[in-house]
Image (cartoon, rainbow, N blue to C red; front, top):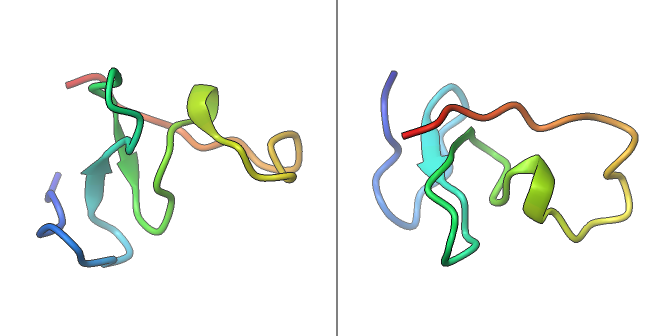
Length: 52
């Protein structure tokens, strides 16, 4: 598993959820894990995560 460098968005890599209290790693291009998403498509697709 590769972690994307800060301020980049490389599909296939992972990044930390943007929620300050969350330690989950999520696949790019997502920025928040399923529990912390705020977009309108929450039920259309699920963002899978990996616990750090």
